[in-house]
Image (tube, rainbow, N blue to C red; front, side, top):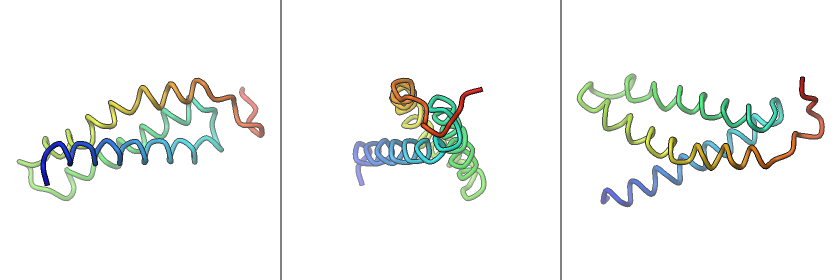
Length: 93
């Protein structure tokens, strides 16, 4: 598989994971906090995976493989969260 195809896959996967997780967490938190929580959870899981399941020489490329797309999607996620009203059953503190 070529590098541009892998990059598009990583970008699409990151977008899907972050938006789906933020949508699920939005039932517990307001939209902006849900977006940051989704990013944190995804970063923790995807950040730990290369260190747990690969050799040390592959840690940097595998970390960049998830980190760069996540950082590219983060502004879109925060923009979408800022435009959403709070959930109807959520009462801000």
